[in-house]
Amino acid sequence: MCGAKAGGPDLAGVDVASETIIQGSVTRDGEPISGYVRLLDGGGEFTAEVPTSATGQFRFFAAPGTWTLRALVPGATVDRTVVAQQGAAADVAIAV
Image 1 (cartoon, rainbow, N blue to C red):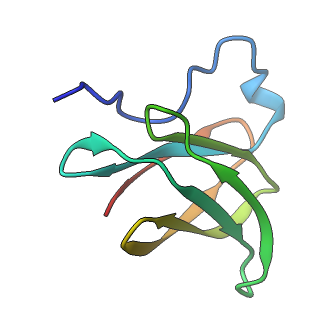
Image 2 (cartoon, rainbow, N blue to C red; image 1 turned 90 degrees about the horizontal axis):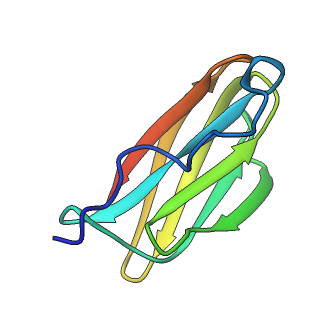
C-alpha cells in the first residue's frame, strides 16, 4: 500500500472557524485514485469540480447545507451526501 492519508488535505493556514469546508479522499482498494470530484447543490445542480491530488484528496469551500459529492474516476461514479457546517471541516472518505 502507498499509505493514502485519511481525510482531506492539511488545514494548516486555513481559518476553519470562518469557512465551510468539504474535503476528503477518493480511494479504490485502499489506494488513492486520480479523478475528479463534483459538488452538487441540494437540487442536484452542478456547483464546482476539482481534480483529486496525487494522494486522492480534494477540498471545496462551500455554503453551509446539504451537498452531494460525485466522484468521477476511471470505471466508476460514486455519490456521497454530506452536511457542511461553518467552523468545521466535513471529511468524506469515498471508496470506489
